Image 1 (tube, rainbow, N blue to C red):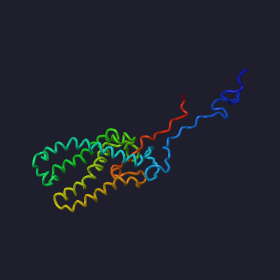
Image 2: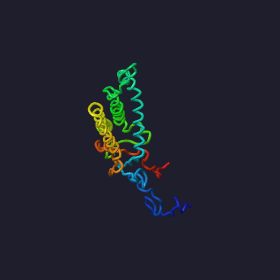
Image 3: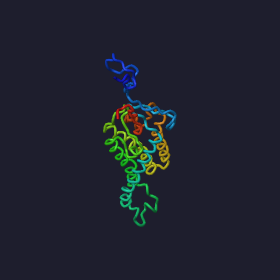
Length: 238
């Protein structure tokens, strides 16, 4: 005697294939959309899709930037400062640079520019070109991509790093040189440039729709959150 029920459904001898009436069917697969983030993040903005990927929160981006800057500064000063120290002669007895306050000379200025601008540029450009993120961004789960969600080109990676490091620092060191070599009141320009640098980063808070900082605008890039990925397909067969 045949079982009148198959798979929990009444047996229908006229059924010719397909799913019997009332039988559960696997839902059709749809393109993944990142989960909405309401009211969270810095400034309360939502995660905006960029090429199907969610934007990284501002607070985490700031944390990665601080980590990268601290790492490069410690390594840079440890590498460059002893060389400059010996070249300038600060360790020599009776050095005029120590006794007469002439510490702001060209070797010192060049050393600072190398540590604060050139080394960070190399650090960021190489990592973005190879992997799409720096060490700090990788540790906090972020990457930099094009504003359409595609991977960056090498040109974009180098250009973004150049604007972010050398471009921002040029004005700072320009006023430093003017204040030291020309007129001390040019030091007020240092304050204005420093405020401008901070605003270039804070621009990402109110920028719409991709929350790009100024260097992202120039390079046409966006920072995305690697910790938010497609939902697991719970209907896949074991």
